[in-house]
Image (cartoon, rainbow, N blue to C red):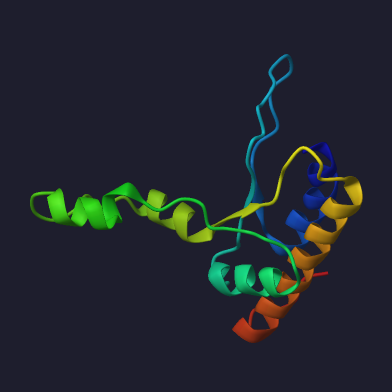
Length: 130
């Protein structure tokens, strides 16, 4: 996870990605998931498809519970309005992490993410950031 952090911090600044916070002094995180929040206005699913086409397996990971098929079938009336939850779920992209993932693998993942973010900015009409 440290190798990801080193490479993702500058990418986050360049592309307005949101990263998980660093632990406070004396705290440790499990880091069983490494994720980024894709900037608003970009298509997270298209970025994920592009990364998979580059050989990097990513996933959206979470679905809002209040908008799940189960809740739509069982919730009486309209589901609750939870805009923050919905926003996060449509932007969260989980990156690969597993014990044998090496620094070169992390570099390849982050390079694929950077390329897909550049492509997504171009196709969305949003300005490229340097």
